[in-house]
Structure formats: structure tokens, C-alpha cells
Image (tube, rainbow, N blue to C red; front, side, top):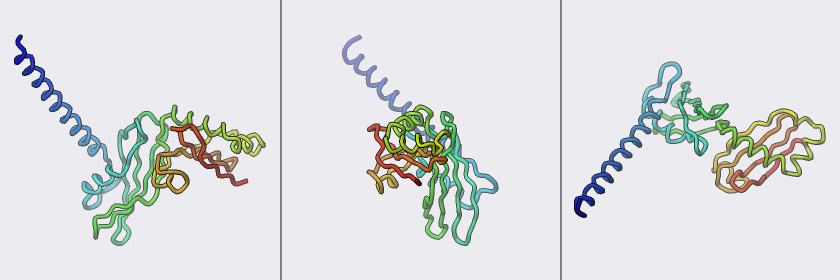
Length: 196
């Protein structure tokens, strides 16, 4: 095989790989759209609303939503949307609430509760929180704390109010009224709230 033939084979192979990978990306986008399930009768513009929701619901890094379930209720010119994203490798779903305004086609996230976090990351966040002296003091004071804490993801735009714009995890012991805001990347507790 001469050099020009070898170069042609390499170029053909590169073009083929690029074409195939482009198809895979397209298939992933389509499959995510196909994973949207409306509970009850879908509202008007449900396909457009579903696409907007897919752009705004982002699972924890390294995970993906297997399906996204949406329920809708109409109030005047707005649609209230309750969205649940389920990941196969997490115990809890991510929950979002949106409003959709038909007049201007605007989708606004109004709240979220994100617990679809891999167990390994969840355990790491709890471990970091327990190393904090203030958390340890509250938990060891016999004020409860024996229960399993909840771990929730805090989005960058919310985290920025307390720390910096990055994903953080909130570890909360409800029976002790204590919560730690954890930066898993740096392995530190960046803020603590206590009801005691």
C-alpha cells in the first residue's frame, strides 16, 4: 500500500467516524425528547413546551434522565408544570416546577428539589459535612441526628448567593435542624445553618 492510498484510507475512516458520531448525538437528543411523558391530556403546544423543559432540566454530572414526567394545570393565561426527572443510578428523582406563559411562550423555573444524586456522591457529601466541627457538635449533643440526612443539589445560580456560582450539595439532618452546604470538588463545608 503506497502513501496516498494509506492517506485515503485514513481520511475515509475519519469521515466515517465523524458521520457516525454525529448520528449518535442526534439519536441521543431525539431519545431524550421521546422520553418526555405527559400525565393526563397534554396541553396546547406540548411538543414545544417539552423541548423548552429538556433545555432547562439538567441531571447531576455523570448521570442522565431515563424519563421526564410532566403534569400540567392551567391558571388564567399561565400553565403550571410539575416535572420529575428519574435517573436509573439514583434513588430519588429531581423535581422542578415551572410556569409557561402562552402569550410570550416563556418558560420560567419557579422552584426545584434535586435529589437524583449518585449514592457514592451522596455518601461523600455526608462524610464532608460530618467533618465540620459545628455539624459534629450539633449531632453529638443528642439533639437527634441519628436519622439519615437528606442530600440535595443546589444549582449554581442559587449557590452564588452563599458562595460562588457552582453546583453544591446541601446535607440536612431534619431531626437536628442542621444543614451543611458542601462543595464536593474542594471537600469543604462552605456554610452551615442551624435551628438551635
